Image 1 (cartoon, one colour):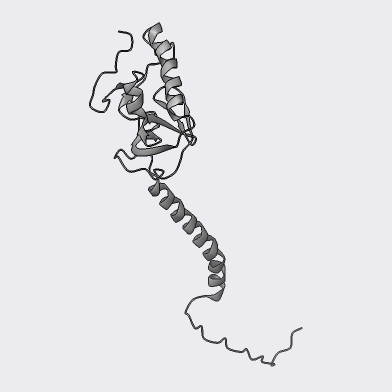
Image 2: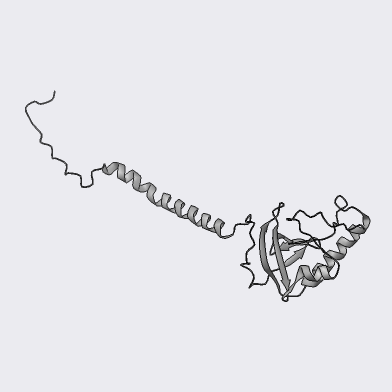
Length: 177
């Protein structure tokens, strides 16, 4: 049996300084650092996306204009610059694919255009001189220069490319006629 008559005095808790439960605050403290880290990472990612908007359609000076780039050609007007797909702005090359070429002559001209583009840039200082945003295939539309000379102008002058104002609604140039 329990003894009666003995009173045990309890000490009062000190008043809370901040007006909130210290247990709740301790639980919340565990999440502050991870939430801040995630927030900073998201902010850094958003800044990186805003800096290099590939879908922007306005012409801008190239961030790479003072740096050499590595070019590989798929055909006479498109390829890869430092691993990113590109297409020369304002020009058209003959199609090499049997599905897309309208005649056998166009397929032959396609190989000539690709080889000419390679020779214009091979062993030269190549730079992106202007960027226009992405085309409907996600390739970046660009102007390239090789040793300070516009690549598209050289290929047009040699007859390997034709001027084409796609944005202005012009029909694709005829390579079979």
